[in-house]
Image 1 (cartoon, rainbow, N blue to C red):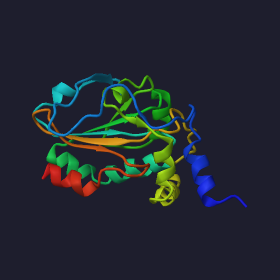
Image 2: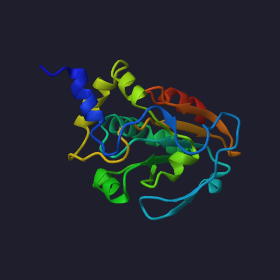
Image 3: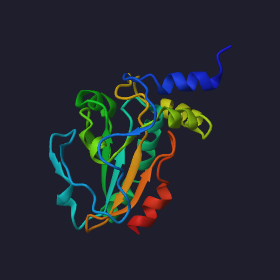
Length: 205
């Protein structure tokens, strides 16, 4: 009989790309109190996003895995539930995905969402912020609630979306203040270990 843990691993590794040991892509990890690495990227809606243009505003920069990841889907919906509050406080929410623009359009089709989505299949932003690849952290997630989050996230998909990107991608969240300084640099310790919503609310209040 196939165990639930085995099924979870198979689901989380359903993306393309070969697993590897823990490694940080590109530059070293970003730390709190340093200036947030600036970038220019194309949003899903076709606009040009320049991080420097958000000086004077608070920013939540989140790095997800891919559009078909159920754990990421749950997280995206949890943040969307805070859209009214985020908007009232003027928080800019940037959501980076490894998925292509076409895949992301399939993901959000018919949906209204607050975040500005940045498809990054070339992994330029992942490299800039030193976002990890780690098979060990994928497996660690199995023992820290990833199975339950995966189940919840699957139920929130309107249609099945095939995963793409790196199967061993680990996410991260960054809170950036009005001066472009990183207040919090949260690199997930395992899949599903996102920055608590309560910390984001404290930041904007």
